[in-house]
Image 1 (cartoon, helix red, strand yellow):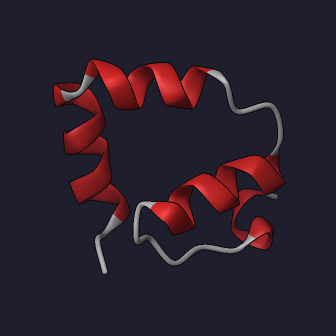
Image 2 (cartoon, rainbow, N blue to C red):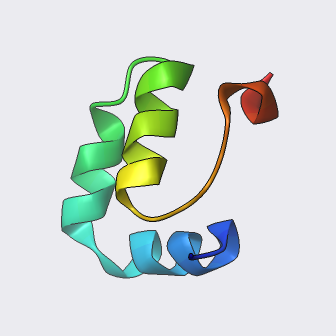
Image 3 (spheres, rainbow, N blue to C red):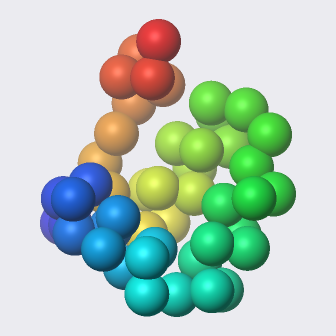
Length: 47
């Protein structure tokens, strides 16, 4: 499981991840995306 800090570093180094993030429209989509990236989060954490 990655930490959010690890993932932020990956985002900074990856144009592909940056483009994927730009397509996220809501909290549920963000949580789904992060889970795909092996980061355990819940919608409540973004409230």
